Amino acid sequence: MSPSGNGFDVLPDQTLLESGLSGGVALPFGCANGSCGDCQARVLEGTVKTLRHHDFALTEAQKLNGFCLLCSTTATSDVQIEVLEATSVGDIPNQQLRAKLCRVEQIDNIIIVAFKFVRGKALRFLPGQSVRLTLPDGDAADLPIASCPCNAQFVEFHVLANDTLNLTPAKFAEKLLTVAATRERVNIDGPIGRFTLSTANQKPQLFIANGQDFNQLQGMIEQVLNTDLGTPCCLVWRASEYITQYRSNLCRSWHDAIDEFDYVPVASTADVLNALPEAWLSRLDECEVYLGTQDLALIEQLQSRGVETTSIFYPRQLTATEVL
Ligand code: FES
Image (cartoon, rainbow, N blue to C red):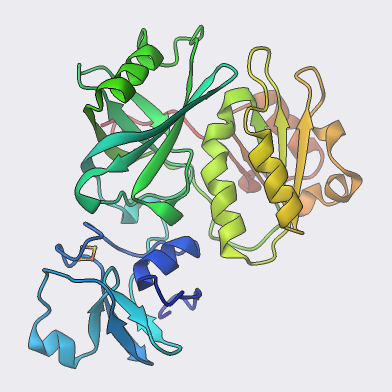
């Protein structure tokens, strides 16, 4: 792709947009169903064909200049396209979408819910970002998107079933289950937050989760694994007092399927860094480290072991301008 030089594989039954998002490329789009024109890109080399119907009409001049719609076009040869990718959260506009609940599952004290956007719409966001979820009765919570942008028609959230920490409004989880039963629509506004993957380099990536804050990291890890760059990646997940490694099966499946991915579950009382395999301890100073929450003691520990401050990332409190 021009100008970034990024690339991705295109499956014959997938559009360029679907394939690009699956490959971890933050392509531009709006409706994802051929009606807005936001996904326009120019084909510089190679051939493409229309795979899905689109209502948006490219002008004759645009067609002559090689423009296509990424959400309705697929490649029929190796292609080079010119398109502006999002490289930072500032490149992504605020979106307001309606969604319906399509999956709910409880594991220990965590309710995992997935919403599908209505009318084939999709949310543009970077992994690690959050959205505001507003229930039919007006109660709203800012929740990290636990899924990855590779399937942007869905978003997944992990919510405490018994929220003793008051992270969400009273009875929020209970109301979510009511939405599941009544099939009412919810509003999703965002994305918000600046916590996302660094695009600066291809250092080994160490993710450190504590209890529920795995929900901040799951989408980022999926994105890293989807991009298939061969960069070593490790997740250390410490249980907290009330929350187990509720997605251990998923993490183990990543570990089994991907050579470069290590998964290290640790007990709530364990020291996270001491639990690291020697191969990771010995190269901590080369790593980028992503924390599910800001943990000052752990940040100090990392710094004392040679991790540069600029290589430690964690979600920060939203500023006034970021709050919706
Ligand atoms: S994303 Fe709207 S036309 Fe492609």
